[in-house]
Image (tube, rainbow, N blue to C red; front, side, top):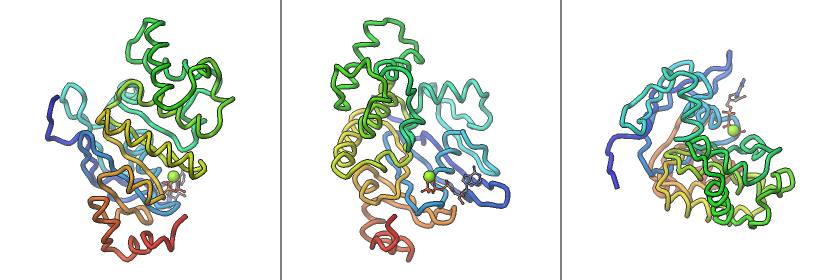
Length: 260
Ligand SMILES: Nc1ncnc2c1ncn2[C@@H]1O[C@H](COP(=O)(O)OP(=O)(O)OP(=O)(O)O)[C@@H](O)[C@H]1O
Ligand SMILES: [Mg+2]
């Protein structure tokens, strides 16, 4: 196992204005390998904007994101070519979308949804791709006999699990997740969270997870950032922030007065 003390990702002064409207302002943090960072805050606080900036899908108004590539080179994300960015998104990164329909190809089979990601990193052998797809469907508790069905015929929870399999099969180094469990009923949510926690720990991947559910943050994350009106107002180790919040707003969040 290689140990690397330098951050995987460094965000500095990240700011996004949509015309006159503020998306997020002056967000800075480091993310290390294997670290799970939760971004919490009420609706409209800038969480999805921040994920978009970090994954280089949204162009910043100001600020930078540096990412340490597999070869060790630290690159400015916004200086990468479009092809390099797309390559990162297909291989080094995963992105679990809030709406699974945005993260899956709804018209192709579950097996192809997983296999496609493997092919993007060079897998060519059909038998082995199908074997990996089956293995991953099993890990996310989708029955093997659903492999040839399209996600259109899946339930919301199954789609979300398929999306997780599709994103993790290539063992990405970094996964972005936007409210991966919202819209699912409570028992499905709990199982999915358990599953996610296990996979993330086993694979040692770094995660930035956006959620307005503090229970999700507590269960999955090592560190937490609390956002309000586009700004980070409190940050620290998850248990410390949630057990002993310093900011009045975080105290309100924790006492669930503002629970969404
Ligand atoms: N494409 C856009 N054009 C204009 N304004 C936008 C756009 N995307 C986001 N915003 C604005 O930026 C602010 C932050 O939005 P964002 O979607 O990042 O919040 P959020 O924390 O993800 O909210 P939610 O929990 O509801 O998903 C909001 O005021 C929103 O209206
Ligand atoms: Mg959002």
